[in-house]
Amino acid sequence: MASTAINQQIEAFLQGEKSFDLPFDLTLSKNSGYQCSEVLRLLPSKRLVLRAMQNDQNVVIKLFSAAKKGEREFNKEIRGHALALAAGADVPSLISSHANVDGYYAVVYEFLDNAQSFADKAIWGNKDNILALFSLTAKLHEYGTYQDDIHFDNLMLRDGKLFLIDLGSVECEREGEPLSNAKSLKNLARLVAQFPPLEQAQIIQSLSHYYLLRNWQCNDEAHELFVKQLKQAWQRRKKEYLNKCFRTCTMTKYGRTFSAEYAFRRDFINEISVDLINDVEALMSQGDVLKAGNSATVVRVKIDGIDLVVKRYNIKNVWHLLRRTLRQSRAAVSWRNANLLEFIDLPTLKPLGFIERRQGWFRSVAYFISEYHQAEELLDVYHSRQPTESELEQINNIFLLMQNSQISHGDLKAQNLLIDAAGKVILIDLDAMQEHTSYRRFQRAFNKDKKRFIRNWQDMNIKETFTSLIF
Image (cartoon, rainbow, N blue to C red; front, side, top):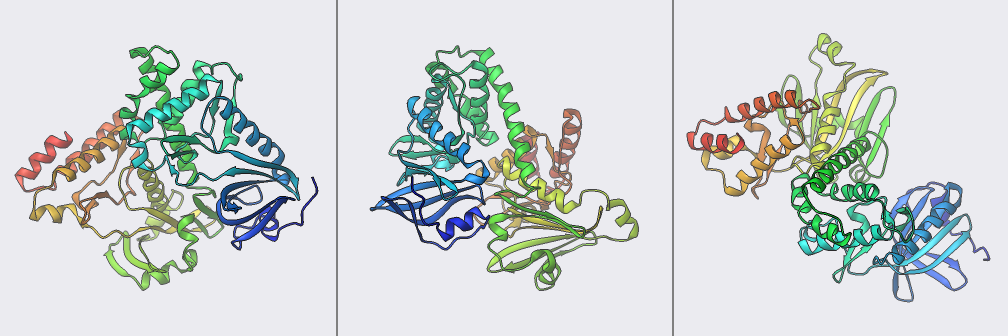
């Protein structure tokens, strides 16, 4: 096809730029002009996904850079759409495709108006939608296909229909022949591993629907085999997620220099105008001190209208510096642990970043940054009243999640559990938290946590309530 005049915004994308002047017009062929209004996904100089409009119709345009294996990704997208359609899956309509347009390839899909992401708990909390999810998966597997990058953001619900998107990651074993049992189970386990840990047992109860559609036996042996696959899938997913906390990716901005190591949630650091890495001490000096301890200083600060808590881990003396200088800092540990708790759906203050001061390999002062959340310590609240049923359930869930994930807190006094005005219970102070590989060591540490928590309570009614709850 004839080449069009190159668009400045697309040229910026191809050159690795991360910001665009919206809206802008885009012409892909003689009869296909679009007004692009929103960036839905961006991998600089690799892939750009845009929301656009043509003749009052909303569309999604996917662009692939020719210089970054764009032809291969373009062909995978077209092939994936055809495979999913042939399998009987609901997918967005493919409006057009354009090869070799001024250094990029393009695919245009219908935009699913009024659709909701499956990531919304209100969607996946509905059992009918879970059955629809397993029906969709069974269709793909029966045709020999599967979504290799299966996660909730690649599933959209509209008018009772579950649509599969991101079709470039649809793979095929043998087209038209059922997917092998091994690949089917592995893919199914990866799907169930997307759900929070406490929800997975309930989701597994609906697996019989998938087994019925595949004409598989659903018995104790099949259940045990699936649970084993699920544990492996969950561990892989957790490892991949935590690795993202210490490398630059869509979620994280990470950096390491001779004098500093840092990581921030990208949606936070891109919204503020302050250079946190260099100005964190100046910001702390302007904030409200919440705790001024010898080993740590905790300050509430406000940046561009965002309420934050900055916890500085102090170096007490030369010997303290020598003991800690080659270890991972407590700020980095807190950053990892807070992200881990978010991942397993255990409530904590949202982690926003950490900073380490360094001289090459040697660490000194470090800072952990989290959201500020107005709340009171559990101990103070229950001095004046008894816990509610909802609060008891939340506390029980916290201990259950710690047990299921083999996590010990290390200092589980009641001051490290907060409760807000809405009755939400939050776990804080995570620098002593450990994830154990040895079950015996975990049990010892977890029992210490439980005993430390029980020791807080002087009110015998509360003490008995918590003892029966967590033991």
